[in-house]
Amino acid sequence: MNNQIVKINDTDLSVKEFKGQRVVTFKDIDMLHERVDGTAKRNFNENKKHLIKDVDYFLINGKELRDLKQSTNFVLSNAKEIILITESGYLMLVKSLQDDLAWKVQRELVNNYFRMKEVVQAQIPKMSKELQAIFMLDGKQQELEQEITVVKDEVKDLKDNLPLLGVDCEEITSLIKKVCTKVTGYETAAYKDKSLRGRVYSDIYGQVKREFQVKSYKAIKRSQIEIAKELIRGYKAPKALLDEIIKVNNQINLEEVM
Image (cartoon, rainbow, N blue to C red; front, side, top):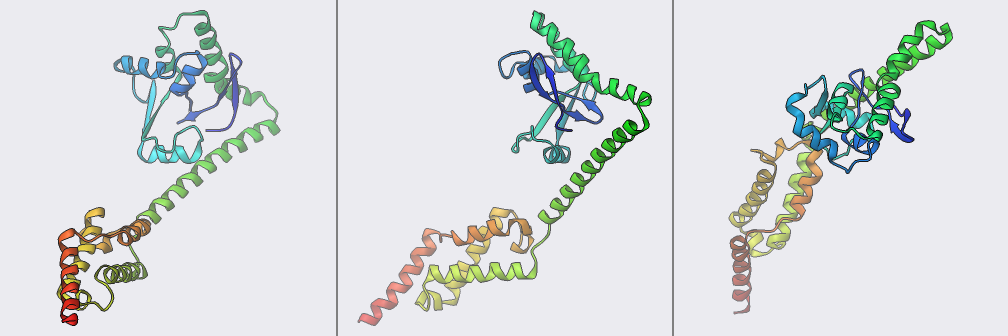
């Protein structure tokens, strides 16, 4: 992918490439043909059975999509997948568009967009050695940028999946103790009741494990530690447990008054 712009019917179209081919999005097609948003996608869904995946279109998701988001600016950050249309797919999708504008756009898109890369590559042998060297360097630069993007993505995945360190576990247990003290009340009867205090501890740990679907809080990923701490800080004891804490504390206070 690059930032090159091609003029199609006096409209700027950013060049998009995937697996060595120039491609377009549904949005590009609707824009160039001056159709309502969603028209190209509807035509695709209606004719998908006639199209061949990885020939007429590419369905991109998972790691490929993450790489694409890193190297482009046209994929929405919350997109779960994206479909990119090749030249053959585009020509099949616009078969039903027969107005003058459609014919004009098709001709310009095929000649000035899809085929232009092939034209440039065919001219390279005829260029001077200096120009050939420039094109080769540009191609190597793009390959290097793609490799860097892949490495960055792999490093990010590695960091996101790191387990908690010892210091992280200590932070969580310390925070749970503080929250437990806040819930029971410092140096109160409920706080001094080891059994009751232990049930509060267990309930906080249990909530953390339920939220992250883990058997132990130590199985939480390091990238999720801030979420876990925020969850602990916002802990609220179940009504039955809270009522028992209040009852124990009030009972002691009443005995002191008597």
